[in-house]
Image 1: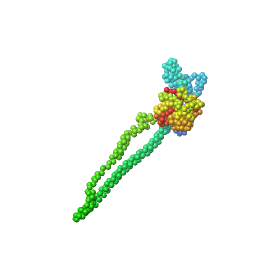
Image 2: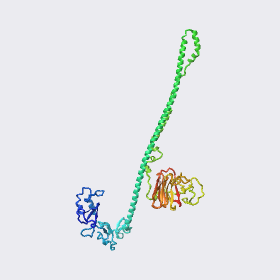
Image 3: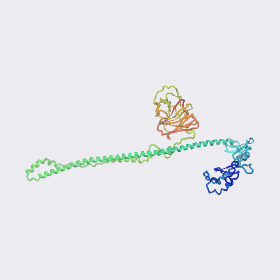
Length: 546
């Protein structure tokens, strides 16, 4: 808001127009003398701090009053110790002379004769820059006690035999440390911002996946309800068919019984007519003619007892289906899921959802998971050669006479490692120092096509392979035909590759010295992962870590 200014530059007060060597310069560049600033102290106490000339408000976020700002700035002005009448603001403080000098009185100190004097920015209390034990200027820094000391302390004081250095050198070193610290903090802030973007992207993906899953569940449960409705209709239809069939059979028997009753009643009339004859001759004649029928109609009829029909079989089936579903639904959903986040314990749940890639540059963290793979001779292109350890592969002009097996690449100069990883964390390194200006290093599934030169064969051009590529001076990360530029400050001599199978990450680092993170692929691995390379001209080697 305000700063002190020397009388040689601003000598006129903006209010009283008097010349003064003690001025306070506001952020709007108006200058006030100390008297005018004090006069408006009470007047502006309850108002937003602003300049009384132009009324511009102070940009200060804490809204300090004008008087507070004036008092703060005037208290920080260091005056020259050699100005007798009106002291001017000091330009420098000399620790050798134990005094502060304005621009005019500082001139002798700029000459060769005072070159040994130690000048610092204006200091109100010179004693803060002096050794409290010997009352001499602090010229050294004790690394053991972490304190500024004078030149006498290492000889006669309590800092004898301590490791000391000059203040200027130590200050430069600490400034460099602070510069590195600030750079790393900025880098960490960028990483945290990237972490926020990744988490927000994951949250958006989670919401989309959740909505898709809910829609899928609605469709599946609708289908299940339709299946249950169809099963209900089929069961009822079965019962109805059985009922109608049996009722039809019952109706047939009832009709037969009714026909028998009708015939019996008709014959009874005929028998009664014969029975009523008074003429014995006519009675005997007709009786004899109807005697066979009389015998037949006297036979006892069969007694029909319908067997009760039961639908216990279908009831038993539906009851069994209901009990089976109840037994399934009785268990919590989480215990019924075979995999996924819902099957993890609460303690590991958050860790399983959040993968943290170590970017501290501590190589020992990765070496805990160090592996030393070797190349698979059956996968090498005929122009590639292995050394005796099978750790280094190089190019040759002539093809070797090797069997063209199903695992061998016949067009591209590519090779697989013999080792594969299908769980856990694994770290291996590739030495690419002698591979000139072209190489591909990464990993792939065993299902990568080996024959021909197409997107199904090239490392990083399909869904089953991931690689970091260098060609000329450019670096690219390849997967499924998509490439992402990778910024590399210095060409790495070794490339470290870290696979976290469960987390679904494949990370690349500059393993030469600093373990700088280069790129990370994120995927859901479902098959064993093999280290893989593609050569241009120079050799590529697996580094022995175990």
